[in-house]
Length: 278
Ligand SMILES: Cc1cc2nc3c(=O)[nH]c(=O)nc-3n(C[C@H](O)[C@H](O)[C@H](O)COP(=O)(O)O)c2cc1C
Image 1 (tube, rainbow, N blue to C red):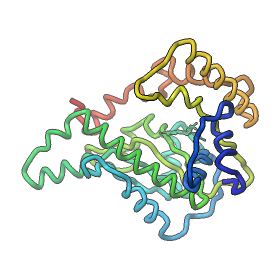
Image 2: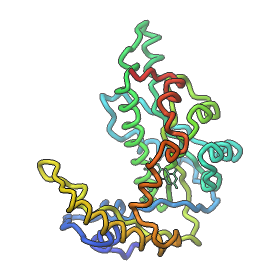
Image 3: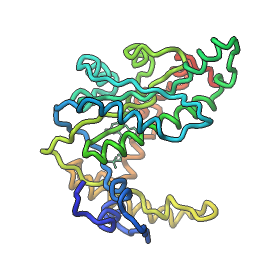
Image 4: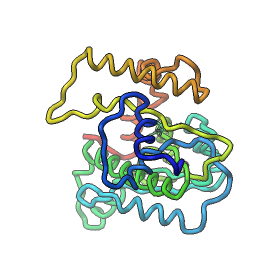
């Protein structure tokens, strides 16, 4: 994080254009959150002893639905295993480079085993709801890791492409039935030779609705067009191609089943991994 950046500087970077009238009495934690950017180039140095366990303590401190704690995390440092996971995750090279890769699991298997020991089949685990709960809890836990790691100067990037081949990933990680890797998280020291800017987000008016959801097509289209231009300029500054705005990216990301990079068969994969999804 640029330590000279004020809360207002960071707000400008976060929105690019119109800045919301945000005000806080103590900007401390907001400065860390607003300064977030994903890091995709890492220095090779390993993480210090005890940091993994500290990060997982932060993760376990997140709220969790009914205290069910139906998530787990597999910490992968072994280069061969990281390389295999990178291959299964669209070949993203930074997975190999990062000294630590965390695979976050929606994990109902522990509760299923608890039920078996008690001689009761926990039928609630058979429903889609249980996968949603486990996934939400896993995401909340992971984001605590991101916030804690960034506060210490580490960089992170989530890896959603870990869901491209969930059955193969489950084999690599030897997951129990009832556990599925929802996403990965790379952690390491950012490579000092590569600088990344804060990526602007949608104008706040598109996301924040006061009292009731309100939108009109024309206002939304105008704000989206504004954001499209902001993101195109960002992409150009980052060397990610001129004229590559948000609209085109969203269309490419979502237009067809093939745009989902294998995740269009997620229901079947998750069922094979032991989630009936009733
Ligand atoms: C669940 C999730 C999965 C993601 N998967 C990937 C990924 O597979 N590869 C990647 O390069 N970035 C991935 N990202 C990072 C997003 O692309 C990034 O957060 C977004 O573009 C905003 O940029 P910023 O994090 O730098 O602000 C993922 C983010 C999330 C939250």
